[in-house]
Length: 273
Ligand code: HPA
Image 1 (cartoon, rainbow, N blue to C red):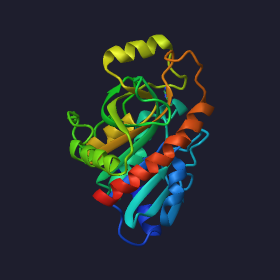
Image 2 (image 1 turned 90 degrees about the horizontal axis):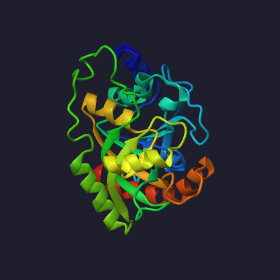
Image 3 (image 1 turned 30 degrees about the vertical axis):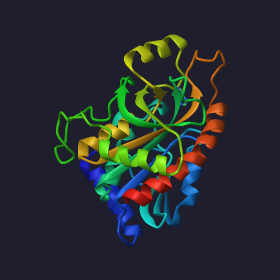
Image 4 (image 1 turned 90 degrees about the vertical axis):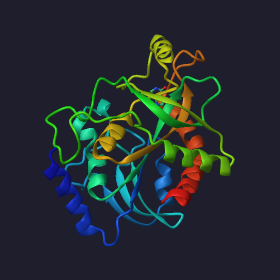
C-alpha cells in the first residue's frame, strides 16, 4: 500500500464529502460500534466502497466510515477495523489510519474490547491505555519506509499521548465514570490466550489483552498523529475465573461498557474537539 494508494483513497472521500474534515477520528472496536449511530448529520462510506480498504470479515464489525458530528463537534467514526488475525497484511491493517491522516486528522481515539488482567477491573469496566506491549509478532511499519509518512525508526516513548489521556481522565471524573488505566498487550489471536500466557503477560506488565489497536497506534505515531485509547473490559483474561471465554461474552459485556464509553467519549469530544 503505497503513499499514492493512501492519497487515492483520501481523494475518493474528498470528492464525496463537502465541508471541512474533522481533526479527530475515533475507531470503534468490537461490540462498541453501536456508538456510530449517535453520529449526527453523517456522511457514510462503506469500507467495501473505499479503494484500498481491507474488507472486514468478523461478526460485530460493520465496516463503515461516518463523517459527522458528536455533541456538535466534527468527528470521523470508524465503525469497525481490520485485524491482523483476519489474514490482512500488517501494512493493510494500518491503511485506514494513514487515510485518516491524509484527510487531515490529528487526534486518533482508539477503542477496543479487551480481557482484564486486573482483579479490580471486571467485565463492563473501562481502562485508559497508557502504554502498550506489541506481542503480536506483526508490525504495520515493516517494509520499505516512505519518508513522506514518517521516519524509518519512529520514537514511541510517548505512544499514548499524556495530555490527551489527562483529558480523558478528566472527562471520566466529570461524568462519574470509573476509568482504570494500564498497559494494553496485543496478541495476534484469533484464539483467546492460555492461562499460562496470561500469567506470563502479567509478569511482563500487561493490564489488559486484546487483538487490535497497536497497529493503528504505531501507524498513527509514524505520521505524527496524537493517540489516546480506551479498552472496554469484556472479560477477565483466561485462567482468572475458571470459566471459558466466548465471543458471545465479549459482545455482551462490550454492550455494557459501550454505554459508559459513549458517555465518556461525548464528554471527551466536548473538551477536546
Ligand atoms: N483476549 C484477547 N482479546 C480479547 C479478550 C481476551 O481475553 N477479550 C476481548 N478481546
